[in-house]
Length: 625
Image (cartoon, rainbow, N blue to C red; front, side, top):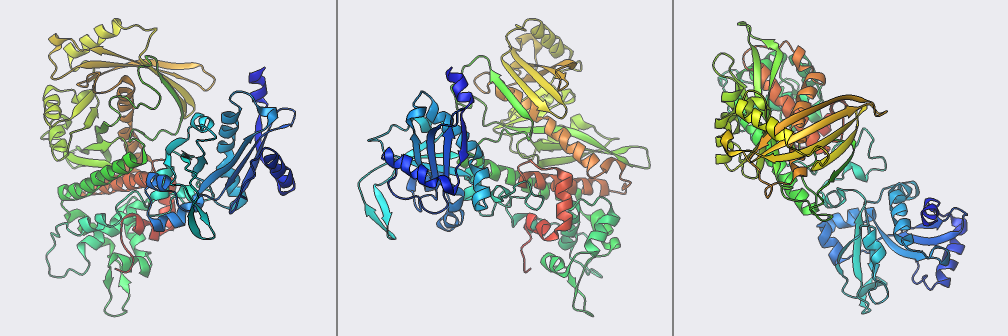
């Protein structure tokens, strides 16, 4: 009977006409107190028969609250701008008709699910954080704890009266509840985030400028070596390169399209980029197609890769520091599907991220630029390293087809990177003894695919697979999206000593079953991985997270092929294919970094093509150059 009663429980805001009854009910239960001021929302919870069972009131937050302000970490200036995105739960009364176990938490959870949407309808902006104050002499705050509110501390016993703070001696507990996983980061950011928009899905609100260092990239590009002879040079080398980067960020693919974007740029854009001033007209003029082509062909690809990828790595580290302060992790691989997962061992408490939560994945994989076929018949091939959490390429190296291959390019690719605290993921091609020694010797870890190219290791993995308990997986997950349901079951097993693969500790066995949305099985496959991570280094769920995160580099390659049409590009002269691939990596990485990987890349490039000022902002090019 109790379950049926809760199923009929509903919460809705009340209109102006019900206001007197709302206040009368609160007054009858000694809850009226001071009048709610500012932006106010009143809610009533009813049972299936329509009887009122609980009342809630939300209003503008406290102007100053030490525990809350320290938790958010905002400056006083930003606090005054963002305070309206915080709501205060000032009234919560369960009426006699609702006096039963769990009513308070059930009503609160239903209210919080709709609060931000209702606030937009009533006041024109969303709510990202809810605060409340509990008098410990009267209440324990149990319902707030059950509703995932976080206790931050205590007030100092002051209240604001007529513009002044007066000591009243009533010290209260401070509780807050974030309504979005990035609420704290958004509220403390320097720039307004799309979540603050009344419609965060609007195409004009895709980009969050808080994520990137908005001055450093252009400064780095200005340091690149200009190989041109000084005589006859009219356009700045860095200016030309930044114009190409802007045009690539706007979704343009060929040199002709890049040149056309530059030609159509406004005087404001050209001024911000520092373009050359015509001595005849006094106007800014962009470089010609020939100048753009010569500049792109003459730039040192290794130097450009080093500058761009070092900057991308620094931005990823900066994002990681922000995530730690905000209480989130960098384990998100950008999957927007509905996901459920569980650790069947149950060896951790709720909220415990488990061993390995702080490990950062770096995916290594190669890509052939199929349209860039050389005169000798070979194709341009690039090996890249990409961070799982941000989707940004932090290393890229050319693979000389006639001199080396991906295996030999592996160590030089990772040499400039700091591998401590990272896990390098790669397919079975890179499951090599020298590669394992190199990664572990640099303080990193590895998770690599296991196939028949390492016969002893593969045979040991098959033997371990035969010995697992198929009915008791260590971790299970289900992902619904992209027109299918993917179910994963994960086991781990020790690597026997006779195998002799350097530092190998555990096999990871992943069984993936794909079904239609009607739950009709399409396929089932089993994959094997090997890692040097022991059980104390990483729990099974984080091992699985890292294996899944490796597919983020495949996503990068897919975007380059589909959105930027890279495989059909006919640019094949010299280092041009690699230069443009670097700039495409940069464009994709910046968009993912600035949108938390929640946006369609093609849609973002179309928006940036319409709004070149946003493109310059995103690349950190200040106004008034």
